[in-house]
Length: 256
Length: 267
Image 1 (cartoon, chains in turn cyan, green):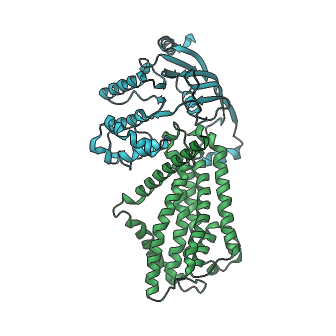
Image 2 (cartoon, rainbow over the protein chains, first blue to last red):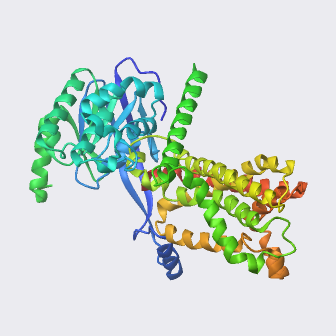
Image 3 (tube, chains in turn cyan, green):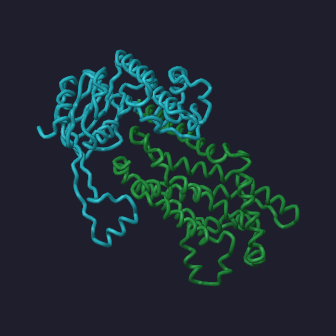
């Protein structure tokens, strides 16, 4: 995935016929011991497994799109492909802007390092230079409202403080696209409201959102939804309608 | 324009690398009770204990050209570069998985940071070695020669070797999580199979000697001891040290490149 010059029509993410296949062992082999034992027994059947099939969509500047589907239908794999971490087996995914990932509560922090060190470390892993982080530091600190705790090791933080810090880093760095994977369900009510307010404000400013979820908690934020089921795209369109159909299908599984 | 972008990207990666190295070193030492002093004390205490225990067994070995405490210390701090790099690198990708699942970043930077921070630790240990050497000089057991500067020729080879091994192990650990236990056993065996406190002459076994030539750490330790005792290593020694270093680096780097997409899928 290369960051290229943005096309004139405002397309930020262009996913074209993406297919992802994995070869995996029929029984999950994740230890050397198991691999050796099974190899001796001749019990290593490999299986081709199609995780995503012919997914295509385009996301334009300022859109907020929810990707919905049950657990294990390939949503997270799709996110990995979109953000360029994973190369798809076929097809291609292009992004024309900077991507900022919003991680789960407290994920990606080094517990022994102070909040301040973690800000720099996380932002640097996301690909920002020292200059860029310095410029945004005040905004991050203001939003996180951690006071002097910013100089204490992160392992002493409460979960609310962790959430504030993580959220603050993700939204204050200058990105065009925000990837959110199931995050807004955590934190207390006041903080959730603050997050939603901030996200709505950013949306008005023209930030693009891609939110992965298996519930309709993000319905208010997104106007468009993509529904994925067993690796295939079932629907792409107005979020109200798709969420209704999705909830319906989840409630009455036999109708499918 | 394209070139400018590339230099900017490189500068950014360099910045990330320094942050990672700084974090590692801080986690390792600065936050402990006596802080940075520990980096120097640690190899010294180690040496004191080993010299006390083993000096009557091996200390009077005629094939040791170096004062025995220095013999132990020199072997340990070179071996420690590899040990610290690899045992730190083994879980480093998995530890960062929350971040690596969501962000595109060169995964090679994480093991590299571990190797670099173990080089910094070596720097401190080297100071400890110089302190001991000065003490031994005072009692007439050691003589300084210019050969000691050859350390800077040896270090890149050890570093390349550690890098290759670290790349390989950190990538493999993503797939096999029991590697942690297996590797700690291997590391212990490797420590004893390298003449850190004994000499291979003492073993008096030709097969063992021949087998020892396959142990890269043996060559690095040997090289370091030679220059400390004022012996110029031969061209052959240089060749062997660098062949192991470059070979390991290439294998590790290639392995990581080949399985990169699988790592992304598995994390």
